[in-house]
Length: 351
Image (cartoon, rainbow, N blue to C red):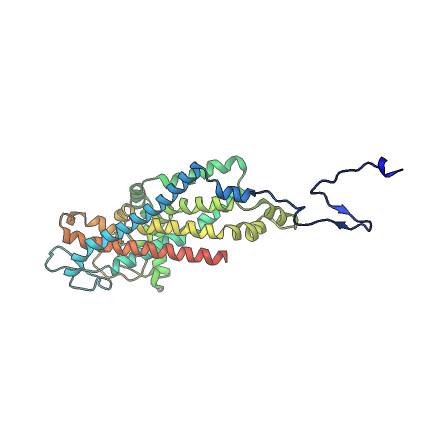
């Protein structure tokens, strides 16, 4: 066939030509064309009005919360300084609390701080394992038809007013726990935590009763957060563990709990924050005492929050109110320290 009858087939600009040896030739930078704007570049250059509004609102909310927290701290310091200047004892190490005479004030936060820490951590010690068991049961063992109703019932505990918990603890739980408290005091009294304290075991107005009530109050918070984290465990990891022959408990122990450990700790610290600031329930249950705190669960006393509630009658005087505001400042700082510690623990677990 002559060259005049040969049909020429056009080669597309982006189609490579093959050499006789089977290699690919003719590929140059000019033959590989890239779109003028990639999707990533388009997303960076095009900002929708809704995204801009949402970004501004989110940033503004974060700034607003920070400003409010800073304003609260400034207010507490501003109102506490005049009272601290009139204080005749060391505020952080003294156990006294005499604020009736503004010319001779002697008030310290040591006992209040110790009672707050003991009752809160005792409540956390009781609530954490129970909340963990509830979260594991609802996510891994509970039948599907009962899962939501039981979760709703547990969440309803968080909706009960704290004053109701206080009345229940004082009138119902304290008499019920009396034999247990007496047995602990008699059998384990050699241990400082169960030694005879300044509170009345018969009356029930002790840290032991208050801590159990507080544990019930923070239980739904820890359980709800833990449940929501555990349910997010990747299905592929669970199915992989089952395929390898793991039992249901082994799946929970090796897959679900490690995945949700950081959320469980975060929920526990959220519950601890609630316990540190609880007022009305502890106001009703704990019996005040003039004796020094001895780190016994059968001590009486007052937490920082309940002490502030007890002293409401003195708030008409700025100097007297400043003493209680100074105690509130300590609680404010304590809450920040707890939250910072929780974030450090969670960050360490992630690493």
